[in-house]
Length: 407
Ligand SMILES: Nc1ncnc2c1ncn2[C@@H]1O[C@H](COP(=O)(O)OP(=O)(O)O)[C@@H](O)[C@H]1O
Ligand SMILES: CSC[C@H]1O[C@H](OP(=O)(O)O)[C@H](O)[C@@H]1O
Image (cartoon, rainbow, N blue to C red; front, side, top):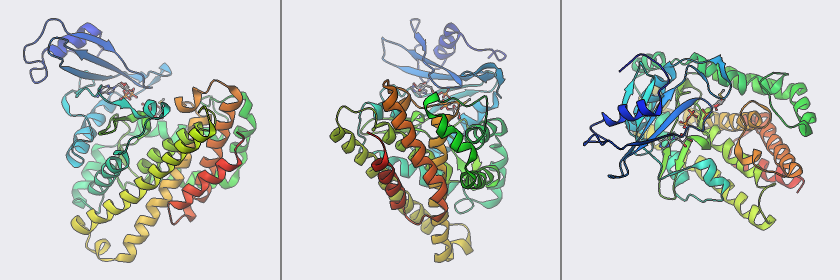
């Protein structure tokens, strides 16, 4: 293949046509559409209407698409993404798209088309319910986090994997956008003027700064497990029967609670939006209950599965033999999960990249209510996460904050 350049749709078709495993007959009439709606990359959807076969070509751009060429970004993230997808596919079969090929020069990953699924953020915004989700995502989290940690893999081999997944530029985005910008005056910040008082409070809250500094330190230094690194509901394809995790270009070895917190924080962002969006309070309350039940189930199932993997496959003799250590490890994971869930919520209200769950609320007063609620839940999780011993504390924070929200 040729040297790096952003592909045209015609070139994407030519590459797809040469994929014997997807298009064995090399059809002449492939159709192509660039469908990338994320912040960073090009995504080409290529279909053959005659056979019904299709494929996805995802290509990294040498800059952050959301900002433009003034924000250069490494193409190596395409390697990280394809290697992480392959790893995740081995550890959690059926829960990620199949990778058909990776081209380093073109920073191109060719993968299974998941267009029969919907992006979970959209699904939640439309009020969808996903009965398999908690079970699937807890399996994904437990297996990927356990088997890439010092608890579940050869500890010398792990050090080499840490090296392979060094991802400084993408980590820097997280370090800035999640653990710095929202708590200072930054050109990256982006929020409605109506919540200037909230933004000011974030900048001056010393207790919050202390907790965020601790979460940031862990993100910078703790190579606990191979993370997806950006596991929000826009990185999950879903149907009632199936869950597929996509887009692990932020993968690196970091604190396991960051991934669990990302899932839960994004469910809570949808929860906050339910104070501004639904037609009736009964409908909204019912959906909020569904979201909290899902969150409880995710943590409960995750903990049970992680502990079961540890009992059966633990490689660290001392850690595996100590019931007290196991309990302490799980408690620290829960505390990290709550803290990171809160940090993920705050960044989506005042930081650079928002979420459609809340931004789509057209009525300014209702949007403001949802934003303030998301900040209240997020701040409370950040401040109390280190004291938590049960997922019920997160549920209580959400319910109490809801009760105090303007409706
Ligand atoms: N495997 C896939 N199958 C179908 N559509 C996909 C697939 N991967 C990505 N997409 C589409 O492209 C969009 C952007 O993909 P994503 O990986 O999130 O890109 P980015 O890294 O730029 O955020 C997704 O929201 C989805 O609509
Ligand atoms: C300048 S990147 C901002 C933001 O975008 C990424 O999300 P995605 O690639 O899924 O759109 C990531 O969350 C970054 O923090």
